[in-house]
Length: 169
Ligand SMILES: [Cu+2]
Image 1 (cartoon, helix red, strand yellow):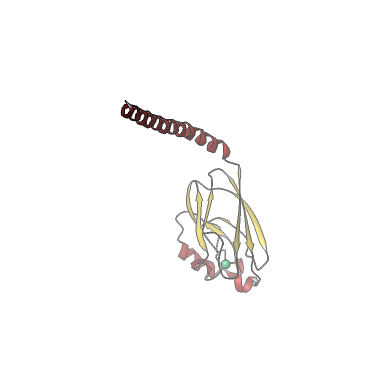
Image 2 (image 1 turned 120 degrees about the horizontal axis):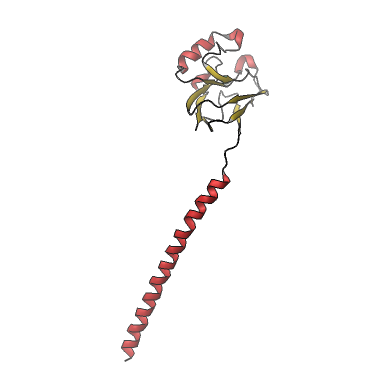
């Protein structure tokens, strides 16, 4: 009789354990869809994308990729956080139209010193002024159609290190 009691007790506790597990599972399943809804509500697409990118005396941007949403107005600020003058370590920020060859554009830009290394507007979506250490410039433009665009600093020799992707989602 005692043996039977022990067996019954074991069976009962096993049953309790199993039903506890099931209860936990159910809770998880309920939680997930709620999370998704919250995430959707928390990220509305704003009309304006504010972007700040820095260039330094080591010939580097602090960003390799910039992502905005289609239809947004982009307010982009380039800050030259270095100390060197424009003539030695000038930086700008140039976004190229699709299909523009980066290296070819950079070599054309090199010859356009009198235009601050902007060889012409036809291959460019938007660009800042050429800056020296401590300066900054803000430009505002409409995000182009969805896709990936190249950006670079068109100061001679800089694009090898100072380039990245401007992505419109
Ligand atoms: Cu530069």
